[in-house]
Each structure stands twice: as structure tokens, then as C-alpha cells.
Length: 257
Image (cartoon, rainbow, N blue to C red; front, side, top):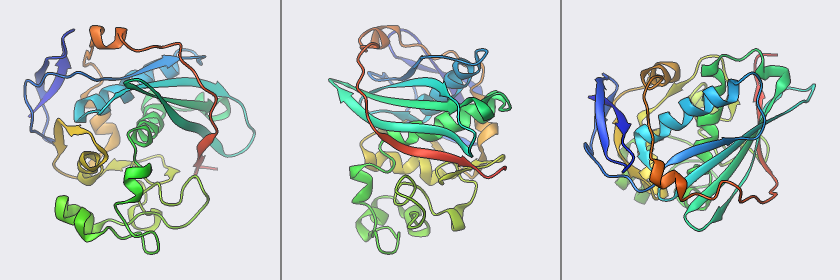
């Protein structure tokens, strides 16, 4: 059980032992990548966090399409720590955008900021999108039998059916799964359930590694902190300048104030 790196042609190699994952596609050739562009930063914090976040998802999934995440800052005196905008597509790339509230960003560690970016990349990977909405019953949040047949772990999972339009139906249920990566509120300690990775297969992506057990998010981030994951040829095909204004899709609130 090893950690991944990649050469310029997208051939994944394996570097270091990890007790938390099960590699199911060793030495895979990748044709897509998750990467980022910094719009404005706060002492390099977003750049450092974005690298960690992209490494996290590039480790676990091969996305159906390239993903480019734009990152920037804003200021608000309220309890919103970050806001994400509705993704959009051009050719073989999905574009997303996240802005961090500088009221909180300066107090975040790189791991804190990376966790928020990882969460939003999850949404860009269609967690909460149209395909997601077909997997469960909206009146109860329980998953449909056909979804459970494909991923048995979904029998234990429920989708959030409360809170506002940016949270309802787009996250795991907060009451049952408080502090899980893909619930709707930011916490100081967060963990990742194996099913959060597995469900990506139902959203059109290829799973490169499976998580074998409930694991602290910071533990998983630290494992890939020093990994070099580069796919130069694929990244060069992405139009980093393409941009569309879209509406806010989610505001992430802190539970710390």
C-alpha cells in the first residue's frame, strides 16, 4: 500500500507505505488531472493548501474530465469561511472557483485550508450534482436499492435533508456523520469515510485507490504532503484563462465562533 507520484506522461508510480488505502489500479496511465490556479493569495497559504488538496484527490480518483480550481480571497465580518461557485465546463475541463474569507484564512493551518479545498473539489467531482441526485430518495435521504447494490456501504449512509439551499441534498447528513469531510459544516477535526471515495465511481470517475477505514483527514493529507504529482502534458492542454461568472453554490460556515 503505497503513495503515488506521476511522471509527465501520467504513469503513476508508488512511493511509500500507507495502512489506510488499498491500491486497486497500480501503474495506471492517467489522461486527466485535478489542478489549480491562484487568483490572489494570503502569504502563499492558498497555493500550499491547493497543492495538498489536489494531491489528495489525484491520489484516489481519475476524474472523468480535467478539473481546474480557481482560488482567491474576500473579506466578510460574518461566519462564512469560504464560498464556492457553481462549476462550468469547456471541452474536457470542469472549472470551479473558491474564495476564502481573510477573516479566517490567516488563522488556518495549511491543513485547515486544504480540507476546505478538498471538500469543494468533491463537489466539483459532482458530489451534489445531477448524477448524485438520482442516487437517493429526497424525502428521506436514504439511498435507492440500485445504488446500494453497486456500493453496499451506501445502505448505512444518509444525505442531508435540512439547512439551506447550499447544504440540503449536497452533503452527508450532519447529525449522523458530523465532522466527515463531505458534511456541510467546517470542523476543527474532520475524517473521511471509505464510502466518500467509493461513491465517486457512481459519479463517472475511476477509483485509483480505495480507503480501507475511517481515517482522519489530516492523516491522509500528511501522507501526500511531499508527493510530487505532475502531468505536464495534460496540464498544458487546459485553458487556464477560460472564465465564466457563475452564482455561488455553497457557503461554508464555521462552527468555531
